[in-house]
Length: 149
Image (cartoon, rainbow, N blue to C red; front, side, top):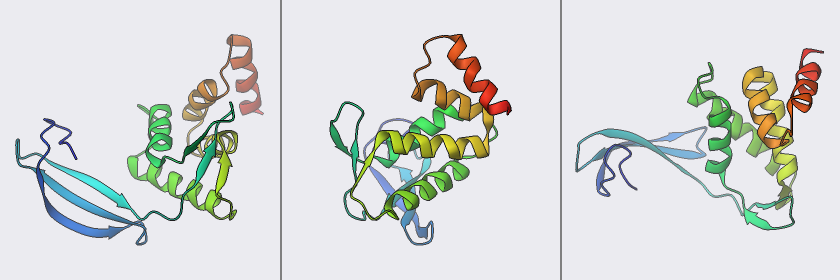
């Protein structure tokens, strides 16, 4: 793991504890190069989940990719990193609760939009505009009308 501050590859673990109801391990690390501290999370892998993309390709589910997309939508919004982690945890539980090893990217996108709609309407519109690939302002306004209803 590289230090986010300086890119140095060596660190030491300062603290380690269970997190997220035992589904993850939270570790505080200190960079041996610049001595900055940062937090990492290690998640227990619970079987492989495959995402079926819109073009038919299959790729392994990537929690960090989902979290990154949601963070972009929530940029400069009153949504904390902890809230985002909780939303992703809930989404994963919903998906894994179905008992299937495959999920479509469309299903994931719809679940994310519903979570964001409940949490922050601006973040929802941002995510929807990228996810639904609005072609012009008319499509954007149509989505806004649905949100206002």
